[in-house]
Length: 87
Image 1 (cartoon, rainbow, N blue to C red):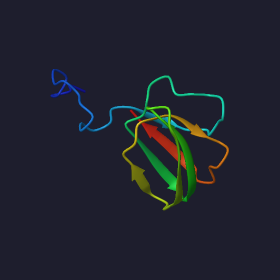
Image 2: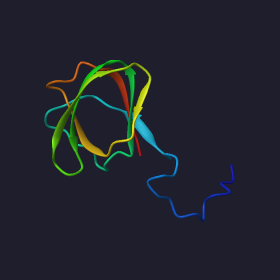
Image 3: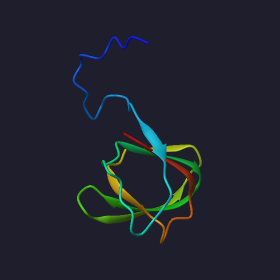
């Protein structure tokens, strides 16, 4: 398939062009910081932001997109599931 936007410079406001399922881990980090996270099954979400700060999002609804740049979804404190990182 030809991509009519192949010569366009991507930015953080551009749509994601890749993604992958996330297994929360207190040790494993993403190879590239996310553009956003999708939460399929609601719950609490503990993340390490690109800045290095650890944050907790309480009561994230199923089907939520969070426009956050994270390097890690932590297993400690995460009860949400079916998480997808968008890049």
